[in-house]
Image (cartoon, rainbow, N blue to C red):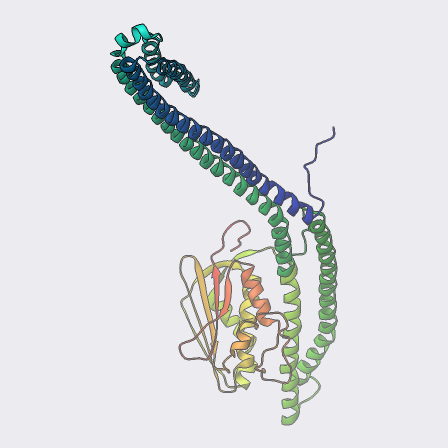
Length: 483
């Protein structure tokens, strides 16, 4: 069964042009509808103005013609001139025509409003027809002109009311048009805004995906493949990022392989070197003179330091490749004392003062990672503390977090190095004591080990000493905890 596929734009340009067209289309519809409505409103307004002007003119003409007709009738009654009778008959006919034209101006749809005008017009027309056109009875009919005048007033009043109704209805119709336009503009504005958001989402989604994938690459997570959806250019960029991820992943594997091999190759001759110096120090091959023993001691110290550097490389390699925690209950105080014993020779040689402060507490954590973290902090403190300096180690805990601070009287870390000392292989401006230079991964390994357990490691201010590192390790629990 073939699944229908959703339409996808071939390029960003196509998507932008389509979005622009769809966003503008409702606005164009609104403009066309508004123009058509305004044209219709203008036409109705023109018709209303024509009707009002025509009715007003007809009413004025009717009033004037009635006065003229009454004047002719009275002149004829007084003088008996046949020419005046002819003029009277002609004006009588014109007046009938004016009455007919007045009714034709009315809007056929306004039956209620028309009825009053038509009734008044018919009353005037009937009275006008009652006036005889021959001279014999015209004199007796002069009294009808008073009735005709009153009926004309009623006709003018009905015409005015009709005009008022027409204007009121036109105003109401204008308000309805205004409301409909406002409603249409609101609906189209919402549609336009919705379409704009939709296309912003379509355009922004692949950009966000690219940003996420770049952050993934920057964080060192190279395990997940990269797939970018969207226009053709974005998918092509996703393919390039996937190629870059593959290359970086390959390089990372080669680097890990190199670190494993070089660390192993270095440890083999170093073990022989340490065994030889230990044999010399123990006097197996004979007693050594004082200066010879001093030289052997120096070789021992530096071989221990070299072993520590190699172990840092191994720890770094292990931390970067392993994310599994092996939880275990441990005693904080004895662990720190055990780690300090490994640095006893260097501490005595430099005449360092080491103070420990903390209550006995049992904690649940990954012993190997926590031990590596603390060992690197202690090694860093011993290495950078000047002769006859001071190292202050304190620890405390609450229900959720273990806090360990390792402070020393070494040189204050400059601002430029504070944000970079935890980066792998970074060498700060302050040089460590001893003939062997550090690898620059001790603090990086320490932070990686504690972050793997959900904790933090940061450089903080101490009450008296210039350098202090603060470790925070959360209480871990779950399966795999061993006592």
